[in-house]
Length: 120
Image 1 (cartoon, rainbow, N blue to C red):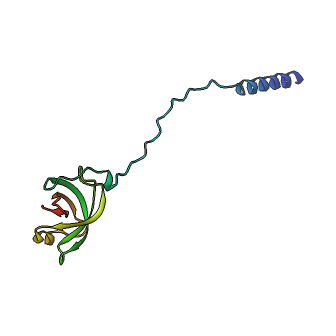
Image 2: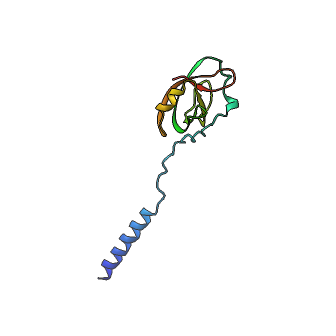
Image 3: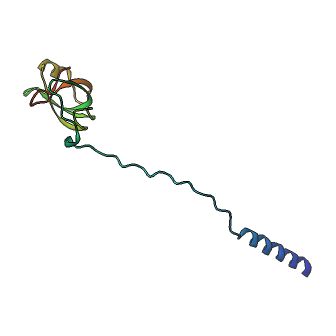
């Protein structure tokens, strides 16, 4: 009986000592660090071309029929401005009746000398 206990004890000690050995290390490949999102300010954008058509997407947030403008939360407009929420003047005031709050827009706009306006 004593011999069985001794053999069992030695087997347990051997098993534990083998499991405590240092395991081979796996080389970790360096993962690229995530790039920060760079938000452009209006000052980083190129100078707009007067009269050039630009295309934009956005969502109507406010409609001012009396003054003839709508407020749109728009995506970045390539070559004109970064994404933001702002007022846009509507040349054809009849268009104002077609807008509803939360309407998604895809529109053409132009940049006259001193104003932002929607064409269609």
